[in-house]
Length: 423
Ligand code: GDP
Ligand code: IMO
Ligand code: MG
Image 1 (cartoon, rainbow, N blue to C red):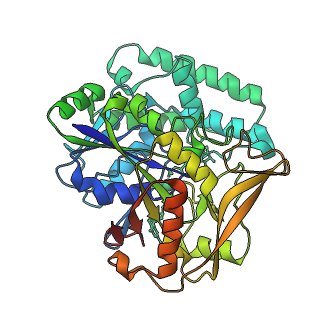
Image 2 (image 1 turned 90 degrees about the horizontal axis):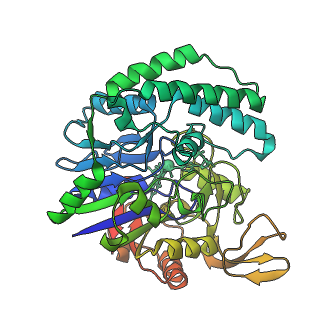
């Protein structure tokens, strides 16, 4: 009787989707617990890549239930497109996808407000995906939101009208000069509502209690990454939900007592999309190589991801906050051919060396302090077991395990399902 968690430990795009898909067979239920269509989870099956935004990454397996939990926010327009894309590729979601009635709804003016808010911030913008995430969670915590279950009750349209008018006033107050055609957006929105209303809606917390009682194994899938957590991330350059382990309890209604493994996913280097501090960011030939070989472009917005060295200070912080019990290391194949690899092991701030995450990464002339490793030259994308990995990569992994005090149990060497070594 247990729930395992799978979370990103950096600034998102660690490869969560690939690992959820790779380990799904060990579970009967996969549940997304937070975030919305700001997420882009890529799963490569054969020669086809699929990008999921709202639907959990277990959807490609037969006989697996996928749940969109109460902590998720849903844009019906994006959701409809996502479902249609899957059905065009002959992936059947019927009887496999269940939605919590308590998940909140993203309405068109949430997205417009996101846009206006970002524009009004100028160079201080968050770098949001502009999917309406912040404004939707703001209405949720402000107790003004609309839950998808409300769509089946009378009177939700009144709340919709109130919200829309409130948002339009807020947009006008921001003086951000954004242009939009609300009639057109609403037409698409209401059409998509008719589509989403045909899906299966459940009281997902009750469904999960019953499933646990029956002895079923559940995997909770996180979106974004720990450094984008609203409380523990690099605030204000974060998303608007708890992306860390506690978010799974709130976002699904499961007790912390039921949690077994906490699987932390990280890249062998670091990336970040959007604004905000990134101490180990680099901008040279090596970051160019990582960006090109690793195809580091956002799965949701297509924006180039900023690249840098592995940062063990922030990674250790994420491991501790989440109580990570095992690690999945992604994309070391991308680093093949780099002569000298650096790892940030501490920071210098206000002239002093620190090894714990400080309150702000933006103050005190913060600089990364690196330990240097000899790289590996071999193409490792076809390695099938650990013995086929270069010695220098093994040393790199051992160093990470020693610093983080958690074992690396999965090594991913490419986007494909078969490019995964389980230890
Ligand atoms: P997520 O948001 O955490 O699910 O990650 P994304 O899907 O946004 O980004 C990860 C990208 O890296 C995707 O394009 C994956 O197909 C790809 N990927 C995942 N694991 C590996 C790996 O080990 N090596 C390489 N080269 N690509 C990988
Ligand atoms: P997955 O699940 C990477 C970033 C945005 C921005 C900040 C706030 O694919 O790992 P928001 O749209 O939430 O208001 O944006 O968070 N961000 C992500 N970065 N991967 C994601 O999701 C992200 N979701 C949001 O770029 O900096
Ligand atoms: Mg992503």
